[in-house]
Image 1 (cartoon, rainbow, N blue to C red):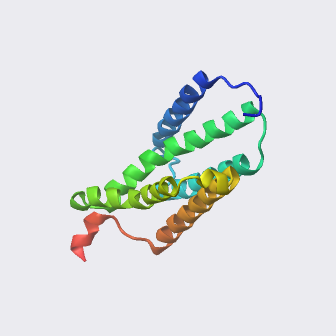
Image 2 (cartoon, rainbow, N blue to C red):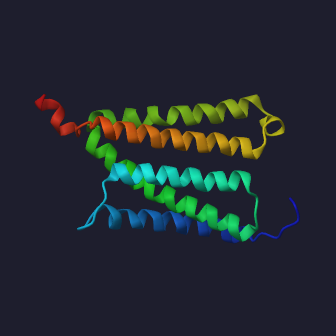
Length: 162
């Protein structure tokens, strides 16, 4: 919109490739002799996502810098998706997993529905404010992950022994 040239045909493949690289890095970081715990990796990934999104929200830069930041963002998202899948298999029994996944998507879908039903939100709220809400949500998720890790909940196969 501001006259800068963007090659739109390259954006989606870059984002998709970044996400695939992030999901490929997941097994390398969580297995092997110097493996990290999945819970620790998730907290750091959410914090990195919040930092990347806050840079994009408040510092509009060159197209190349923005594409790089969004590629890093998608790489972190690609890392988070298998991490969450592993945590679901560790902590949630099979009979509850489907309902839990549907319930976890409800707040995001409700926010999208509210913004669409309200209509015209883009005239009242700037892009930076919308991204700031995303940053706040990511930091809240990192805080919740850190709190849950401190409480030390055991995987579900120990639930029946208590």
